[in-house]
Image (cartoon, helix red, strand yellow):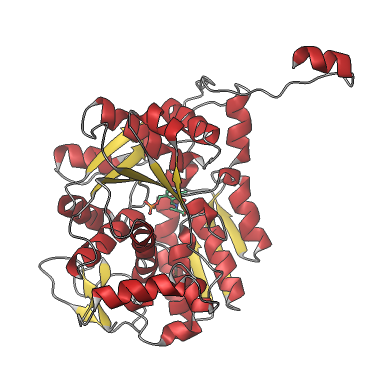
Length: 431
Ligand code: F0G
């Protein structure tokens, strides 16, 4: 659909063409969002078309992002999209996790099934396609790991030059390994995510590099399709709650925007409530929502869920808006709660990375405090694959995992490997 870039600040009415490579409003510095300038949608026809495309062999139809191209701002350029067949992630029932979370039933939308193992692929296919549209050769991001893995893959697939900035020592090896394997120039800096983002913004401007952090509104557009696909899979029947982890709050912004658009165009008739879960040591949005005073960043964010180790989330104004629109809530969870919830998700045969498990830990708290009812219809979004952070898993199950303060995390659902002699009798006895 035809669209423009618009300043997200209510008081500023600035708009810009989609082909302007900017990340903030040049008038007031506010965040930018894509806004459609036409509304010619036949919801019934489109719903049918999207369903039919699932049986097509065309690249654009096979992508769980580009299948919904009518609600993406590429106006024909999608024909040159860079796709690794992202999206198409399953809805999985998880009775054991439901019981642990205090719910009658629970469904996970598992974004870890994406080509690089996280939800970032939904956004990155759009971000990198926009880089091509703008004729950029180099793309960059700062990342707690998943964005860099995803950007490296999509940029290399597109023949672009990916440059990745990461906080040294604070991303999991699985993610670092992906960035290296996919051919990104990988720069490790002794600073945290928030400090590096400020640095990279200056560098990108100076060197004409296209920035692909979630401040980039085209990434947010791609991430909207997580919600489009989820509701398509549910025959446009909205759940009561959608639960997700919050770091830089790009995904919260994307989910809220997707829901507003689906409501506007008549695909759904009820707005699900968003529940955003943060780790206790990196919970500036949680603290802000308690008081609604001034937004205060956390200078030294700390959590073993390194994906969400962010103290100064750039998209908080959008997240605030989307939570207000959806009557949403924010909760925070401890390191022990994340670790235990993660092991439970593992025992469902599903598995996920630590940040994703914050969802189940948060739901457990929200059902205990009766914010979420036991019989509510809940979809939780698992954002990353179980293999993203194997060190964490091994340490948890063997009782060696320590929180950022150096305290041991109790392996309440631990599963120790056992050393046995090469002897069938001895092993039989053990079994
Ligand atoms: N879950 C995972 C697995 C993530 O990698 C991230 C963010 C989030 C949740 C939080 O999402 O930032 O949209 O609120 N990872 C980013 C990165 C920051 O660099 O990979 P958010």
